[in-house]
Length: 103
Image 1 (cartoon, rainbow, N blue to C red):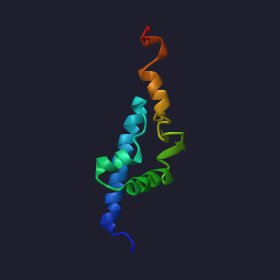
Image 2 (cartoon, rainbow, N blue to C red):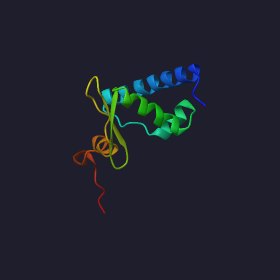
Image 3 (cartoon, rainbow, N blue to C red):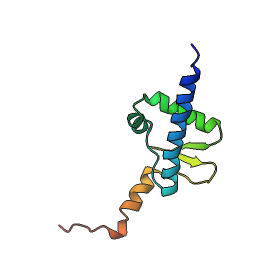
Image 4 (tube, helix red, strand yellow):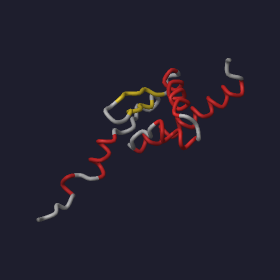
């Protein structure tokens, strides 16, 4: 059964909200939230989030690149990207500032 006009409108609105979150992450250099994290935030199934991301990508708003543990999102209008989780760990805990325990 095809989606109703109201269902399509909700899907577009949800995609716009997700785009806003992704754009904020990219501007701040933060990792992209997982589909599960976004689904929990919006109270929907992760497949619904996947559909919204596909919609954003198909409409030229984002580009996605799969990394080992996360997806890197590029915001097409600005060229800014979300950061990979591994890079984020390096930023938070640079090796030269960690105190090492002595035995």
